[in-house]
Image 1 (spheres, rainbow, N blue to C red):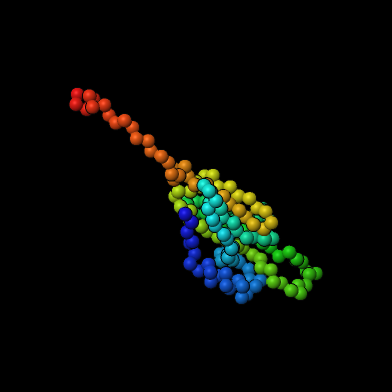
Image 2 (cartoon, helix red, strand yellow):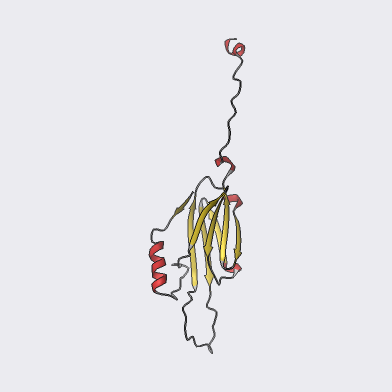
Length: 145
């Protein structure tokens, strides 16, 4: 039901691990780790974005493309601050996920708790299995008549 859209995402993740503190920009955002799984009639997408304010998260759906962007700013700033150690990455983070046609993009819900953004995407009613009743068929008198 979900498809990865960026074949270089794993390379970006490895780069983040080797070069901590690298920051993403709006034109080249950093990777955003995610888990995706089905829970009954809902697909759940959990994205790790610790240290990001709720107001700095942007979620869009256009056609079947789900885009999540977030920005984390450095905690310390100003002329008097002298950083001694900076391992926490900051900047822009982004993730795009192609959603299947069988998902209901009109009813996506989002929660943000403890640095994890959780999106719930219900399966569309038209995609759920359903029973088809067999009718008695047409009346033979109506066919011959």
